[in-house]
Length: 338
Image 1: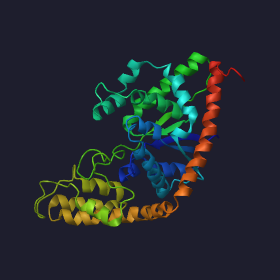
Image 2: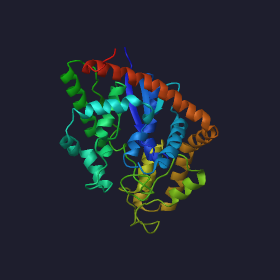
Image 3: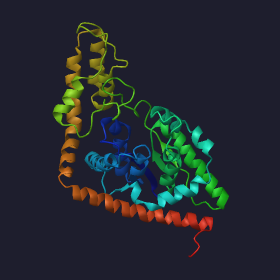
Image 4: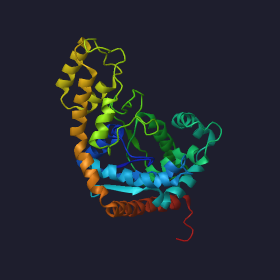
């Protein structure tokens, strides 16, 4: 039976954090190691430039950092093709062809795009490249004929846009060239890790993240600064665990679920201080991320090898995308000289 094909990736706008690890990275490694998938992971530098075009240095620097993060968590270039979006020329041409099959009003109705336009305060000054990025994303997915796309819940509208483009293209040109992808979503409650400050989302821009690259001292400092229960003033006060970020992290990272349940009961009854549970969380996170941090430091010693991995992955990805583009051109009847 043919393997399913995965396409996933990240925008290189900074180092990856433990929210990325919970939301997608550990699942990618599990899927990679299952042997059931052919996996393509894209560092989406062109997509990152849609709202960072005037700061390409940030994207260039982050690209290397994201590659290090991938390698450190266990993404294996022998099993997974890791590539750079801008190095695949076919993606730009596919985007152009698909744009002719999509209306501006349909792009403006995309809930994910609407939410991000509001979040980034673009108002009426929306970069055209940003508005069309669902079409660019469709090109990324279809170029590799991905059947499976691991994403967060908020990305379902983007996948639906891709499926619409696939159906329209295949219908207009009368050939089943493109493949409709399915989304793979994290289990309920596991897709998003709150920030250190209790904010609903851990984010680079909000400065409330623990990075995979943080050293032991920085990690401890961040854990000890975490938001807990503002009403839990004395150790003897009964504490609340709902919305308490420390317990949210323990649920996410501690494999000893019985111990976590005991701590919750003790905290709610009164008699367990915030400092004590933060120290315990620090131990859990140090144990989980120390090996990742060590692997990252090793890979960082040899930047040339990391860039070589990206170059080879991009060459492999390029061959696949070029084949899809040839099939698309053939279906459209625009391979004039072949």
